[in-house]
Length: 302
Image (cartoon, rainbow, N blue to C red; front, side, top):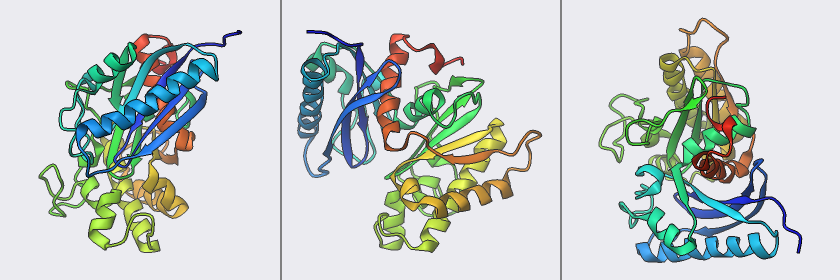
C-alpha cells in the first residue's frame, strides 16, 4: 500500500472543548475531531475523552490517510509547565498541575511537545497566516479566556517558565472587576467570554451591539499597550468571542488602537483577524510539534 508524507498529531485544549487533528509538514490540516468538555467530571474522565480522540486520529492517520505520525503537539490554555509536563487550564478546574505530557507519551509512544494555545497560534499565523513576513507581532485569543503569543525580531518569546504572553492580565480598567489572578481590571476580567457572561448576564454567543463595541475597545486598549511597549507592527486576533463578534469588534479594537498607539515612528500598528480561522489552533499545535522536532526552520528566526 502506498504511503504518503508524514504528519503530526495536533491537540487544542480550550476551556470548553478538546480538538485533535492531523497536520502535514507544510501545515495542511487533513483531519480533525472534537469533544465537549464537561466541567463537572474528574481529571481522569477528561483524559479518557482526550485519549479516545487521539487514538482515533492515530488510527485514521495510519488506515485512512496512510501516513506516519512523527510526534504530538499541544496548544493548551495556561498556565502550563514546559512542553505541557503539567497543565492547569483555568477553565478545567480538575486539571490542576495535571501531568498531560507523560500520560500522552505513555499512551502513544510518541514524543509530545506543548505550549500555550496563543503562542501556538502565533507560530501558525507567522508560518502560514496573517503575519507571514512580519518580524514583530502579537497573536491574541479572545475566547473563554484571553491569551497571547508575542514574536520579537522573528522569534517566539518564551519567558522563564514558558508562559510569556499572558496579555489577558494587562490592566485595561484600573480598579475594575476582580480577576481570577487576584488583580482588578485585567483584560480577561473585562472582555473574555466568561467576563461578558458574568458582567452582562448574557452568554457571549448572544451579544448586544454595545457589548461587541465595548469588548473590542478594551481589547484594542490592551493591544495598544503591547504595541507601545514592544514596538509591534501587527496584532492578529482569533478566538470564538472575537470571531463571533465580527466586524463590530474589530472596528472598535482598531479605533482604540489608533487612539492609544501614538509613540511609534513607523507605520501605525494594525489589528487583523486570524487568517487561518478555526484551523488556526490545530495548525498552531502542529507547529509546536514541528518546532520541537526542529523540522520547520521558518517557525523561528524567519
